[in-house]
Length: 90
Image (tube, rainbow, N blue to C red):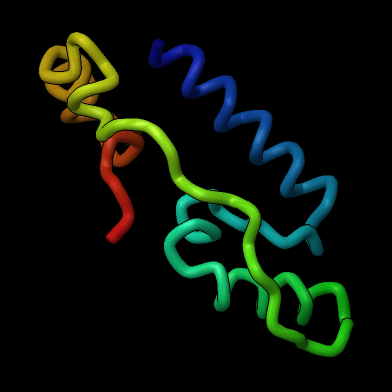
């Protein structure tokens, strides 16, 4: 699992170097604060801001209910740079 996380992180770094002007939008932020996310997207695109209604909704259960060995995964990631992967944005 750590190797997969590290590879994904490496690919993201490559993409960020190749496309330095790309705007990164986190799905969780899009769902929890769509107004701010849409304003950032519109500003990045250089278009006049206008109110948008998101078509996304967060579905599913909390990670604790979704991952059957959540406690084990949390303990395994605790002292790694990937520990934040299990943190939910506020």
